[in-house]
Amino acid sequence: MSDSIDILNALALMTNFVILPALSYGSQLALGALAVTLVYSVLRFSNFAQADSMSFGTMIVILLSSYLISKGWIISGVPTALLVIPVAVIGMFAYLIAIDKLVYKHYRKIKAKSITIVMASIGVMFVTGGIVRFILTAKAQKFADGERFIFSVREFKAFTGMQQGIALKTSQFLTITIAILLVAFIFYFLQKTKTGKAMRAYSDNKELALLSGINPDKMVQITWLLVAVLTTIAGTLYGLDKGFAPQQYHLLLLPIFASVIVGGIGSPVGAIAGAFLVSFSEVLLTYAYKKFLMYLLPLSMHPNSLVQLIGTEYKYAISFVILVIVLLIKPTGLFKGKVIVDE
Amino acid sequence: MAYLEGNNLVASYGVVPILHECSVQVEKGELAVIVGPNGAGKSTVMRVLLGMLEATSGSVTLDGKDISMLSTQDRISHGLAFVPQTKNVFPSMTVEENLQMGGFIRKDDISNTINEVYELFPILYEKRKQLAEQLSGGQRQQVAFGRAMMTKPSIMLLDEPTAGVSPIVMDEIFSNILDVKNAGMAVLMVEQNAQQALNIADKGFVLVSGRNEHTGTGKELINDNEVRKKFLGG
Image 1: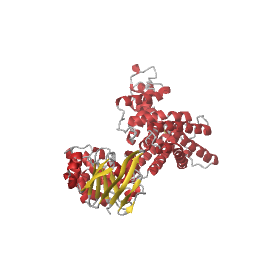
Image 2: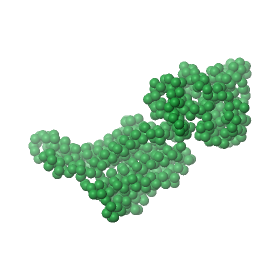
Image 3: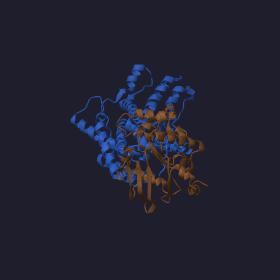
């Protein structure tokens, strides 16, 4: 390690260990948060089952892709998980619609208070998580195949001659690209298409939507379809990036909810902004800055400790703290969200 | 037979009876007003006409056809339009999107109807890209009227269009209502501001405890001593 100040290598270090991981983690959260916000806007409850639904969607992907791999039906270099997503989305949609028919429909019919439906969704959360553990066991597993890196640290170093390398993992690259495309699609759908506008109208004013001839059952179905797409893709991307473990997915609920609330619940833009705020806070606060500072500070000032603000085992607490700060200072979130008022 | 008729309507909320054989009629190109004290069942008449509340007995006819059995949405596709008292726009959508949603059930091209609404309410054309929640009370009411006009209705039902607005805005809204009527629609409205409403109305119904107490032209009712004393404050 050199003893002079080296900004370029410090930046490379930051990119490799903070920016890229936070961007991809943030993208995964954003998709989950978008699903929560859609359900909240249209169906009027905070869906506690979201994180476990992501686990369910990923389970379908794992089952399908391991079948394809066992048959040898793969495209070399491409993660098989990616190929089975369309089919997995259909499975996820079928599951969500079944749950809606069995659970949520009843509460809509009796015009239950929002909090009652939230409680029901906690039940759905446990059942969904249980099904996944029953089928795949609670063990952690990896299901990523194909090329692991777009470019590796070694390749980057060889190419640039820098001391500090940057690797772009396939999973990171896929996560960020797919998230951008998917978010663009959802926004286009909500802003420009007749059905998307009807969904916003239904979320804005249910009774007036009925008076305008908008079919509520159709709005509910389309919402679950969008949720199925977002959920399956978010879960799969997270799993490709960090591996699959039911418990880890279950714990994602907290950062997802933090993202939604920080951004302003019911606001799709807010959900995305909130997701990146949460992901960058988590990564920035748990990162050990020792090496980074060694690049930037003269030898005499090199730190002895890790210079880590918070241990990684406390990363979920960060979501909590963000949540509390937002609720205290700006309860409507960064982008003005709307809060359900029971009629 | 009048264009829209509610005949001998009886209705209740649960066990609480609200309407007792109440009747209203509106002709095409006519502005009719339902007035009366609080709890007289004014808004309930409207809900029954729209099929949002089922009548225990009585009938609703539109252009001579019995529509009592139709759902609200079917009545709307038959030419009824409704502007609720509150929450009558989609607040987080633009003026133009509000109008588009008003024409949601139409399969044909709605752009002509949107232009007609803009001609009737020019300010809405200027503000077409603005969110409905950013408009003033009077403008928002225009959006609400415009949204309801998108199905090209033959009759508009308005529930207390001037509730809770300042006197200036009230005048603005009444003039909008006359515009709507002059565009060839029948208008039936429930109104708290009885004096002003009867002034511009062709016909008035005074409802008390769910019964027709007085019926007549707007002028007749204003000049009726009993009506004046009891409902118009002397």
